[in-house]
Length: 325
Image (cartoon, rainbow, N blue to C red; front, side, top):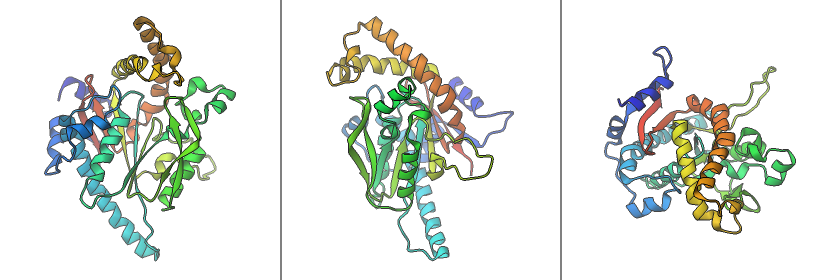
């Protein structure tokens, strides 16, 4: 295993003990078996996020095996739902399979989630696969400003967790036409008058920074649900913090030339920065907001994931860790 992959393996192992089995990239690629490639280069281009490079080779060697694994898990879970329903004498209501995806800012979660959604939706029998990001469940900027949390946006306290939990409860209960708040990265705020409607999907992917974070356990044993309590499977997109910082700065520099140039953009004031000023500004944002959030809240949840995809400096996955059953 390459040195970087070995370091990742050491990170998730203590005294030779680990609940994970770690695979080199080519070992994992072999687990694709006969899963067909169903994405074209043009379709992949449409799924790729800004400054989140992903190639057809990456899809073939990493994400097709993930899709195959999830197909097996989803099928097995559907069988468990059926026998449990018969045991309970239920009405056989549809119960979606929910996949959580976590990881730092700039590691490529959004692209990974979209690629995975596309692959799963192209499986035999064409399951209905929806994708929700937790950005929509952030408190509106007016609330964050009133509570002094604008510089903590993305930290656990900046989310309306109650609304997110109610959304997931309804999804898991098979409720139809469940509404989720919609977020605009252009105006950097929740859109009060727009909603995303999720109507009984077969699979729902929930992507966000802190979706694997547990709440503080109650001393009296009373229920405090976690977002991850609703997940059937969870994925963590991992990378060294130094690499994530480089990707964040690179994305900021590109946004300065694209989205930030729109006068409607919340970050329009950054569009006129020089290269040096833009780099200094992006590093300051990373070091004062994103890096502390990664260290305090996001990275500590890595060991709660069922599957960890560890990226190297070129944004490609170099090692995969799968939790043992």
